[in-house]
Image (cartoon, rainbow, N blue to C red):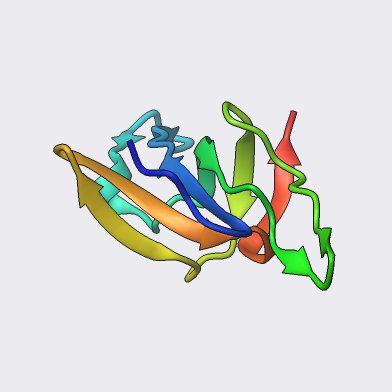
Length: 93
């Protein structure tokens, strides 16, 4: 398991299928990189002086991330991405 440090978050991109108006299903590889991901692990938060800045996301949250954010990592045959909390734009409810 990858345990992120400070204000970093490990996410796994969510593959989505998209259907065109004519009914053609587009595979994930034929379109842009998805921006919706699931949170796999969350760091403890970044220290700011004596205080720790609280993390806004938790494991299992679905989030929207910046298009070019993070570092892609392959770990135990699974591709995940490590991003800073600042690169997470929103939580999908």
